[in-house]
Length: 154
Image (cartoon, rainbow, N blue to C red; front, side, top):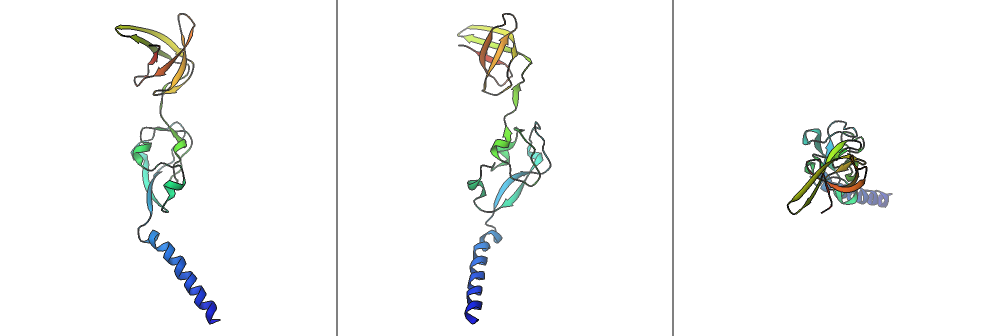
């Protein structure tokens, strides 16, 4: 019986020693939503807080590690308060919406041609999307620019 008690004491001490670093501040602070954030909502730092997680959590899971990494992005699915935020749960905001009229810009040296086009796809910054020239009906491919226009050709 004495051996059993000694083994249990050693086992308990070993387990507590393994937990000691976490209790002594060896935890990892990661961003979480401070309120429920719904799909399509723009994420700001005001909607985020930090929570404690076990050491190595960010290395083991594909989650956001800083609030700056999330700020300015859009939620792709519901983000619950206090829960880790997966990197694939957020996306860059769509600068061009499918079905809207945007400006297509073709530039070659000093020649600049602009046209009104219909966006056939939504797109975020630097994404390649299809648009249709309103006048000719021709479908062309272009890259979404920061101002919401689409750069084509050249």
